[in-house]
Length: 170
Image (cartoon, rainbow, N blue to C red; front, side):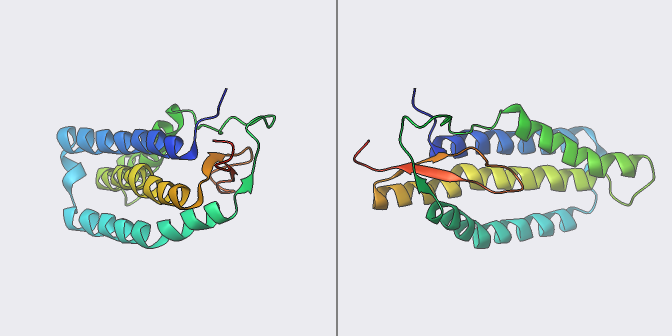
């Protein structure tokens, strides 16, 4: 059985993260009046995240692609390292709770508006992954004749480890 390609994982996992972020924003803005406080701060911070993604994403994606190693389709343990789709949702919920709960308990200065910023950030990162990152990988695959797959050892903190099949095997 062929592992899912890196491009497919970017699209699927990015769409799930973006969806979780969009749903979180929509729910908070619909049901919690405090979520719309400091709207200009929220807009400014999300604009900054957008600029940061646009500036850094191409560098990070190209670096991961350049570090990819050739793999055989029959290589043991080659699964494409798909992320369970509940994990991006859980990340969105936990990050949001880290800012909302202390504010609600009066322990920190953050609150529901920070939750909207977190969910908005997840939306932007998910969209970048599903659209921008996928586009960069697709362009490299078209140029190089390679098909990329995620390898074992990939982690949120250790980075993405990639392998590729050459077009002779495709």
